[in-house]
Length: 204
Image 1: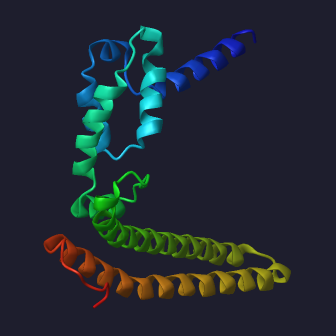
Image 2 (image 1 turned 60 degrees about the vertical axis):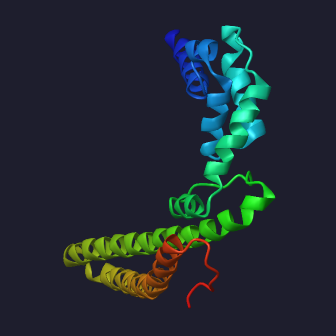
């Protein structure tokens, strides 16, 4: 079993490699302004992202140019911090790292909040429907089990089926109720995308 430590070390090395933001060759030839622009446009946290580049490039001997990188980042973040990108980022369920400058943050967050509401409602509805389907499957299986069960066990199985049916109906009702909220949230998001600078109250 002497190969186990080697396998463990390989797994660790693979894990570390997967965290690299850039390869050795990319580090050597990088235009750091372009790298920064790309990072800004993706909404990365600047301190964390640049530190990741420093770690990734340390073994290659390349030293990231922080000044050039930050110049590019400042350009890229302006493309990230738009109202419409806020909506898309929120709808996709991606995290926001509080990176937008004050003059852009308010409008970005208006879009992000609307998109995130849609994402969260969809996720909750999917979770409820999945739970309801799972309980329905379990109840059907118990119906089959009850046919083969001894008389003394059938009451307990019947009670469990009743509990599952009650939970299934509750999940379906909640999913249906949230469906109305989702329709409203999707309308708000669609309106916002057509009129990103308009002021309006969600749900109206």
